[in-house]
Image 1 (cartoon, rainbow, N blue to C red):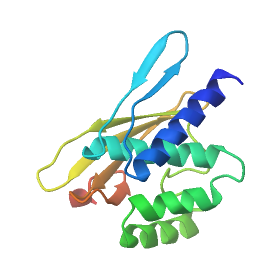
Image 2 (tube, rainbow, N blue to C red):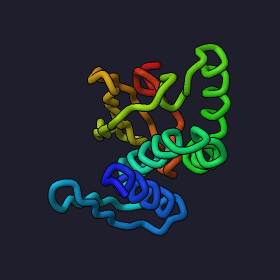
Image 3 (cartoon, one colour):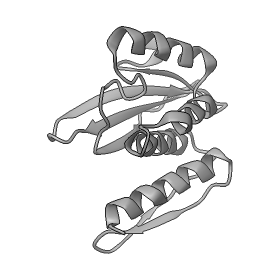
Image 4 (cartoon, rainbow, N blue to C red):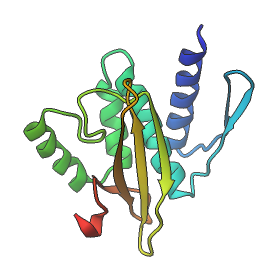
Length: 154
């Protein structure tokens, strides 16, 4: 099995375990030991877990399908899911990624806020191009906004 497939499976297993509330530390080797860690009580970890699992699901057989929908139900508010469906119908693209394809990598950065967590997501695409999104999560660990500006500036 190649290392990319191993890393993807490890990330998917970690994402699903966290989605089920199990929390875990994943270790993957790619030229030396790497450690990826997180806490289920940390909103930025949860946002990163969501994007890791969602991108893995969209990259896999069937392009997401049932797994992508279940991840949306678990991590996103009902109102955001409704907004994303409308955005997707209008833009013919995936609303979570704001794109028609899947990035080759992503980075999540805590932007911090007082009443909720705001994180910046940077996607890197196959051609090296980078795009950025802002994701907002409630204190109850539900993503309620995905866009180019924070929830208060949308």
